[in-house]
Image 1: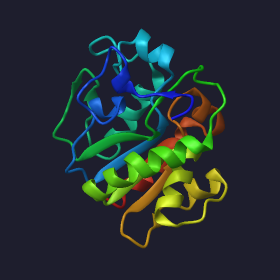
Image 2: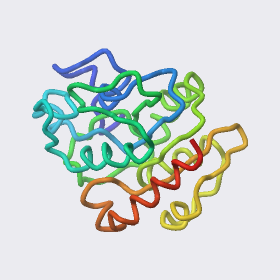
Image 3: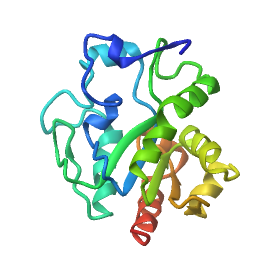
Length: 201
């Protein structure tokens, strides 16, 4: 894809569909989490293609908060370097490639379509989850294309979730668990969003 590097074309290629699924990658999952993208190419090379670099240390607050939020669902994720692989959870992203620019560089919506058609749709058909957690606007938008639901303001979609899709899974849009997401929705409110998900498990 133009402007993206396939992780398999780096020195840190691993036997996973994409890097985030190293942490949670159960193909028998009842819950699929869809983020926007893993990271940019420079960061990917810096961290050696891993989710976190040091055992039991969370360098990225977004990962630490995700662990906390999943505990609200009675699921212990473990650390990315020592994950609880038996969890009924699969992590993936709406864009399965590494941006050539920085994490804050321009985003191309064409990436969503290409990743959706080639990777995400087939993956969801294989897993057939009961629940999909969409982290951020891009993940929600691409799932709207897949399942045919209208995409409105993110705040409204978060507070009125779940979205009942015609083909089965419940979709829960949430805010990003890192700094930008917390700037748009306070942590105490994000916690309530995740508690809402628990009601449907």
